[in-house]
Structure formats: C-alpha cells, structure tokens
Image (cartoon, rainbow, N blue to C red; front, side, top):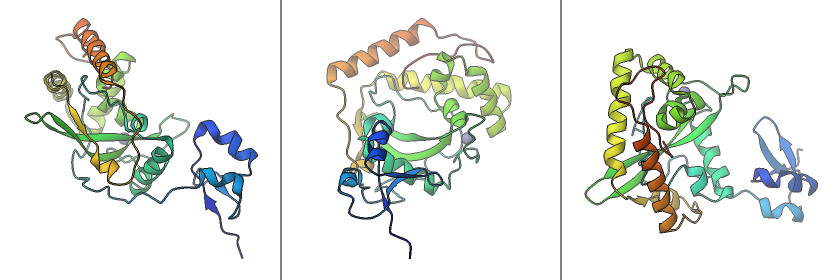
Length: 252
Ligand SMILES: [Zn+2]
C-alpha cells in the first residue's frame, strides 16, 4: 500500500532548505511533498486547504476573450502575486491553472517551455467611478503572449508592441485597423481611469481566506502614480501601428 504523501507549499527561495529537510519534488504536478506524514522538519511548509474553484463573489464571465486591459497608473496594485503572501499565491495559482485545465483562457494554448510561453494569472476588475472603487472580480489564466497583449503599455516599453499587436489580430480576428482603434481606445480609458486614486476591493481574495501582503504606504503609492504618469506624458504618439509607440506606464 502506498504511503500517503503530504503536499507542501514551498516558496522558491526555500526549496533547498526544504529539500535538505526531506521534501521531495513531483515533476508531473510540479509540487513538493513530504514522503510520509509526521516529518516535523517539513511541517512549516504543510499546504493549506485548497482554495475553492470559484472565489466568493468572483464572476468568471467577466472579460472573456483577449483585449488590451490596462491597470490605472494611480493604482498601486501591479499583480496578484505581489499582493498576497507567498504561500497563498502558490495555493491561488494552483487553483487558477487547474480550473483552466492548464490552458490559456483567451487563446486556448498550453505552456510551452521551448517557446518560452508560460501560464500566468491575470486580474479582471470592475470600476465604480462614482464611489472610486476598483473591485477585483475575476482571476484568469493567460498564456505569456495573451498576457503581453493585455498589458500593452508594458509590452511597448519592452519593445514587444509589434508582436503583441500581431497576436491580438491573430487571436481575435480583428483587422489591423480595428486592432489599432482598439488599442487607442484602451489607452483613452486608461488615461481617464488614471486620474482617479482608486480604493481597492480585494474581497474575493480575503473572503477565500487569502492573506494579503502589506500594501505600500500612501506616499509610496503616490510616487508610483506620479512616475507612471510622467513616463506616459513623455512618450505618447498620436499614430498607432506596428512599431509605433502607444504609451508607457507601470502596471500596464
Ligand atoms: Zn493565450
């Protein structure tokens, strides 16, 4: 009879320590485990309960398909990974990838190590501009290529705008001019939203028992917003198209 495995949540930075303490690696599910119950040295990494497949209050129909989706520069939140404690990030991403059957929820592809295409978690938000509340409503599994399209401003900074535009066209079937209009519109919305300092509602995470990492203090958040807007103002072109610059900004 097989001995019961105990799954562990080991942050990458602690993998050597865990290995030395007796943890083993399962390459199929890409996860550490204790080979038997009761290994005291491994208890600190014991996995928490699995996160439910639907987060409380999550709307998995929100924002289907691929589109440019820029996070306001006035928002300090850059990604869910930096916003939750490491152990909970591991639990969360495991759930997000598993429920998507390890496929990109926008274009359907899986991970491809050789193509350097990975699966990544992306956040979908709703915005209540009257109450100035930005609410996390959905976590979606995207491949690297789709995620790059989504954060088009960041793609632009990295010189990836032409590839991102081509991927947008390929996945959505937009014509090149429709794609350019779509990108321009996304930046207009981004500029309007960036004028507001949003209060974040992350209750779909906290209600699922996820512990948030401490956010930067108010002054640091203001600095992020200021720097991002300055970069944006420095380099926004009027003409869009392959190879042209379409804006800059952190968190896009
Ligand atoms: Zn994709």
